[in-house]
Amino acid sequence: MSSNRPFLVFSGTHSHYLAEKICHSLKCPLGQMNVEHFADGEFSVSYEESIRGRDVFLVQSTCPNSDNLMELLLMMDAAKRASAHSIIAVIPYFGWARQDRKDKPRVSIGAKLIADLLGVAGLNRLITMDLHADQIQGFFNVPVDHLYASTVFLPFIKSAFSLENLVIATPDVGGSKRASNYSKYFKIPMVICHKSRAKANEISDMKIIGEVANKDVLLVDDIVDTAGTITTAADLMIENGAKSVRALASHAVMSDPASLRVDQSALSEIIFTDSIPYTKKSEKVTILSVAGMFAESIRRVCRNESISSLYTM
Image (cartoon, rainbow, N blue to C red; front, side, top):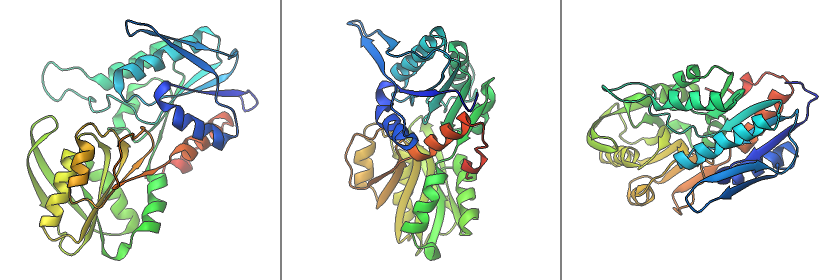
């Protein structure tokens, strides 16, 4: 991409709020696009301005998954057919990422399928954040800029928490690398919750590995879906003598009854980014914006500048 070539930013339906903030940071207008819906549930996408020869950034998180993914694919196909110079998908939350491998016989690898669909639709580059599994970057045959929400979380933790009594915790073994990075950065202890599941979204047993008595615990995760794991972990921490329990997670999927579980749990606060719109109300939820981080990434991509400094942990 040429540093002199004009770029345009467009938004899918459910990421309009974030795209507007990104454009405000970039000091550019949000591109004009129309999505027409039909009675049978189909929809079509059209650009209301010329994009010929432009670098086109399409902002769209794929949650709720199916409609937003299909809308993004149509946006990309329309851009390709309208002679855009390059198509860059900005997907703050990459849905289907939990299907990153065959964990039992006769199942699909959904994340690889989505990567293939995006490639066929015309993807030239992907900008995303906190993929559920890092190896998903290898599913793409185009450059992937994988940003981290820690870029906005770390300053917040420094300003909002006393590190003297703080312990970093992970609600499951799968998130131990992420929690370990926070633990090493702040030079504070880490504990792990070991869980076993009866089936998806249902925990049968959980145990704490480490000491939380008389500590302020900060649970670190990437996705909170039904909030069963993180609220069970928080309640268990309090039962084991923790003074307080807070949590932070990159993506607020928050499927029902997640908000109710958070409100009724031992969590005193849960911090998310705005990668997904959180429409339900909970006094325990704090939202931090990642719009500035994505805007800076777009700016540097357009100028052919390094974005490695945005890769914090």
